[in-house]
Image (cartoon, rainbow, N blue to C red; front, side, top):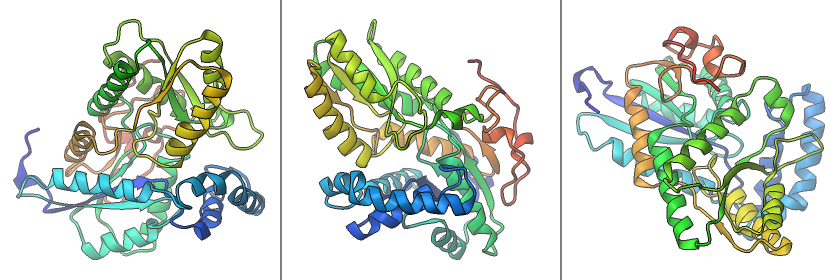
Length: 372
């Protein structure tokens, strides 16, 4: 990519959004409380949401979540893994001595959270801020939730820095190629033509019915990655993990997909294509719990593809998106215009939201729609 350095800001802050995770056993309960208090996760009035969050955080910290994090030493590795991605991205971006990038990590439900990071960025006084979620596929429950709390924190700070928000990148070429390369390596090593399960974090169906484009974007990512593997007649499907609560969630579940593979007598190779860094849902839920289930129900082979993490191609893709947003404020996916079909009303490109120093996102760029 050719860049006119004279037109670029001197100092650029890049903020990586991620979920966060407890850093010690005592943090598990408050982390869960913060998570379930998010109105994007449980869209109920605050008093009801508080009671539900309190109940779930107490019960799950003693049971499911407590056990899962116990396997990992009573903490999540997500912060360290995200910091490694931040360091790799910062090093890649700063190869041009004419530009100065600083990459920050901002977690949604545990430290470092938005208010602290906003204050750090404000003290550093950059010329531009670029917000980059580490969620390739957009959802109101992830990228938009992080963006909302960022804006709330900015409102409490005398900061009016020009800001860009890269809302999603489900078809980012470098993400697709890095994913396909990892799958191909493990597919060939495993042998026996396994069925590739693209396992994404699930959502309640009612969130999708309200216009959230997450499922559509996950399906587009999976199809693009499957095609990019170059494996002829690849047997693959998408599925969803991590169900919580009594609501109807996206299907098929990963458990259902594993049981179906047992019935079909085919091995499975799981790739978590909606995650880009390792954490409890990959290291415990996929590697331990679903591996045990696969063995229990008679799946003839089980493997798991690691996340793209700090792979060269993925970091290069993140850098390319950042560079494309220099001096371009507002909200857009990596492709520049709207990619979600118009029926997805929760697509952030369809919402008239202005960032600091930017025009409303709805008029930033041509509305190019990719058909279903």
